[in-house]
Length: 403
Image 1 (cartoon, one colour):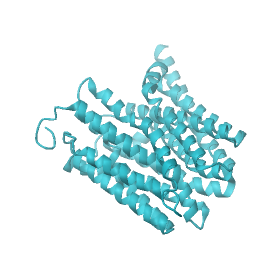
Image 2 (image 1 turned 30 degrees about the horizontal axis):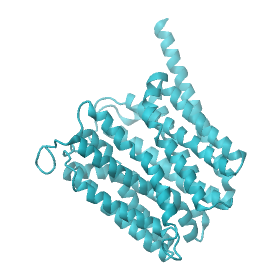
Image 3 (image 1 turned 90 degrees about the vertical axis):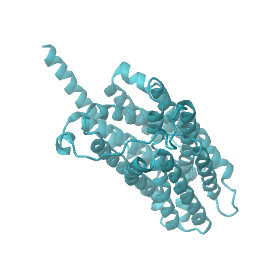
Image 4 (image 1 turned 120 degrees about the horizontal axis):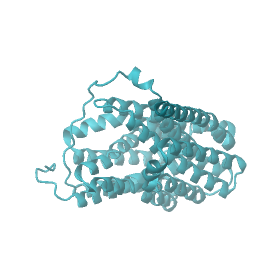
């Protein structure tokens, strides 16, 4: 039954609505990735805090994900999504006020509201899975995630078009665009007829967490997802600041972010096939090598092509490491353990992302672009050694079984 009491007999229409909403919401998020650090730098006296608002946004998303899921289990997908969009409008409007009044801490507080908004729209793909049962389900999820490809182009482009919309308040126009995006999304959701989600249970079932986290498959899965995501955030957040220091205009950095986000999401259409063909561990290792290549390219120069190719390699590496880690994590889950393992996974991954977002500004201010990119080396080395160690264990186990 749909939330309005009638049969949800329009899965194609529902998925189309959710895919459109995903594209609009993610466009706002990508726009923020392109401008937030630059706004933070312009508003903050202490330039090392330039990326604090973005880091706070990630923290808010981390802590709001489970409450948002529980709330939607009670009031329904549609009401929850519409509430999330209204929170996004409030956050973007507060950002406009903070930029016009040059209030850094108000801008940081606005990041909390935007982070909560982001937590709600993360569930569009799950709603698509619920509304499109059977053979259409996998395609429905893919259609919704394809919104990331559209957002890669639309988000930075909106930033370019609105950079000087307000006189004496650069980038405030970008947040006005986010207000419009959220209002349009809210309006589109009115026409959705979504099934009510199952209530979320946080029951403590299955193995104790202490036992789970000791398993090699769990450690490698978490390390891959957390390191891949944190490294990507560290470098992407610092890129607009570094390009500004190197004399590039905002149009250049926005274009680099466009290509980066395309590289993040476009491979999702075939990453699953590659994992099936070559194995998840090999794909994770390929992701680590791609992020290492990103570091080497960034350290080799600060021309436009250096930034562009480095960020494309970074996006591809994120895709392989994050999707590979997520796939591996699903293999370590037993019945009754999904809720607590996914909660722990989200906490560790987005905790790492928040730390990387905050560290990005401090490293950029103290050591410059080379310091930011050099900081990639140790986490990537740890992830590589753990993944190779796990692969050797798997090979050893197979040899023992065939002996």
